[in-house]
Amino acid sequence: MKFLKVIINKWFNKDKILEFLWSIIRGILVIGICFVILYPILSKISYAFMSEIDLYDKSVHYVPKHFTLDNIIGAWKMMNYPNAFLTSFAFSSINAIFQTFSCTIIAYGFARFNFKFKGIFFAMVITTMVIPPQTILIPLYVNFRGMHLINSIVPFLLLSLTGTALKNGLYIFIMRQFFIGLPKELDEAALVDGCGSFKTLFRIMLPNSIPMMVTIFLFSFVWQWSDIFYTGMLAPEMGVMPQVLNAMIANAQMTMESSIGTSSLIYRLLINSTASILAVVPPLLIFLGGQKYFVEGIERSGIVG
Image 1 (cartoon, rainbow, N blue to C red):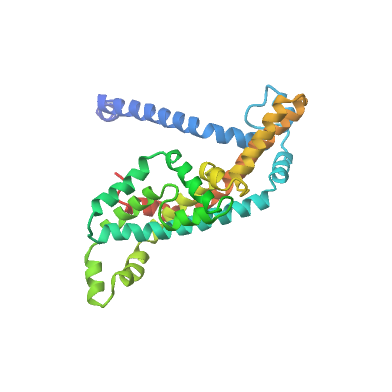
Image 2 (cartoon, rainbow, N blue to C red):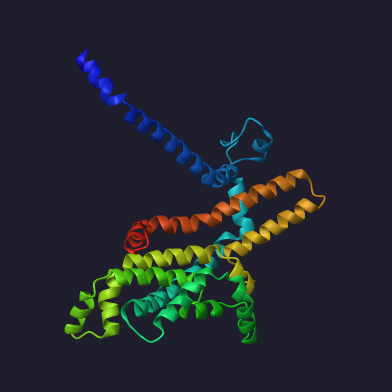
């Protein structure tokens, strides 16, 4: 009896019951939020392998009865996927590399040097994080159009090299926080060994900031991959993945408004859903490959907690 009372007091006291109930509620909330976030992706994955017959079958919800790869093959051909992938990958990679380099240099200057109007200049960098890009895109378009640079990669390279491209204010802020967290004794030791500012940056700081630079590269690559606003305005004929998807959606809208049969419309919707999954796969694989550096970089950036 004493042993039974001990068990009851240990596992069935008020605090234990409340803790157990709260863990259940917390688990339900987390599962519900995850389901709301992941449901669109899961449904698109399901549709990618689903035939038209399954769409008319009310007993089919998530798992297709007639598994098929025709949707993926059709989306692959309609997107001209190899060409769209190579164009998007090269475009996003080049911009991400240039943005990582320029933002690292700028952040190092803000973190390690004192100069006149430093606070004002950094406040301008922070301001770029809150100003909507729509307010500056029209002047940018007018300037680049005057230089006959529209429909080329040159405007994006200029913006990337000068640290004024998409989300560069955020990248500079993150890198600055990281450099501030590094001990100044590293700079002093490098100075004693005869290293100047640039040699200290390239031999001491950059090797220590590789995880953070990979994080910036991943952020930049993913945002550039999915960007349609800047790309649609400055390079509308580039042929990157978001532009290809927009063209397919526009064709589906025309199909919906025309007198084409329901079967063709359903097929078009299936292809568009599958195409969106194909467009998400490359950045997802890159993120999974660099996840170790990404997590380490975020932990060392000084903006968590």
